Amino acid sequence: MEFPRVNLHIHSNFSDGANSIEEIVLESLKLGLDYIAITDHFTNTWKANIIKTLNSRRKISRYLDEISDYQEFLRSKKLPLKLLGGVEIDLRSSIDYIKNNIEIDRFQLVLFEYLQNMKDAVKIERIIKYWKVSIDSKSDFPIIGLAHFDPGYLIYNYLEDLIEFLKEYDIYFEFNYSYSQYYSSEYRLFFDKLKEHKIPVGIGSDSHSLPYLANIKEPLEKIIQYNLEDNFQLLILKLRELK
Ligand SMILES: [Zn+2]
Image 1: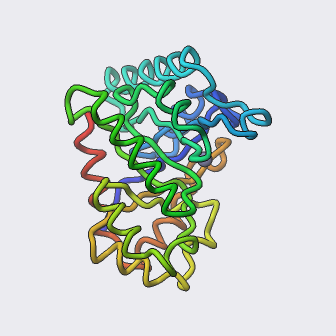
Image 2 (image 1 turned 90 degrees about the vertical axis):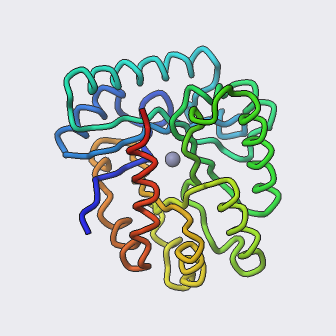
């Protein structure tokens, strides 16, 4: 099966990445990527003191404006690359901080990082429910994924609950280039469940600089190893449907 080249986890210099959005877009074109998402960090934990983050509504607005300028550039030149405006939300952030700063209908993709227990899942549920009532039309709702989630936290005691949660909120599971230990065959049962329940899966390199942009081969190999091609296809369909 031929798949489009997808990297939905990229950091720019709006947070702790080394490159501008422009550099990322131009390099992605050169590398022949088909879909990319810029997903800069959003957090109000201790991390916000040591890395650059999207730390104000003004900055987020500038970030999204810049992304839309490049979306417009790609569209007007009919270039074969689709760019998504995304964010990586640290689940240890306070709910109010998330609610007050993330205008959800301006994003095409949201990654949540550090899901470690079912309480975190309930937190995601609360945030998604809040967002869903805060927007007008359902079609504007972004794609939601789990960034570098370690299945080991939940699969031994909460596998059914976890799968139920992912299904109910249509959340995809990311194969992340930088965390290959999370895709060990020790977790096979989890991957079988993803397949059985048709949970979408995606690919992210967690790129913080240009040489990491095209690191999508290993995650794709994992997808193939666990027979999750149809699940990847589900995510690709969502990407194709984006305006
Ligand atoms: Zn990241």
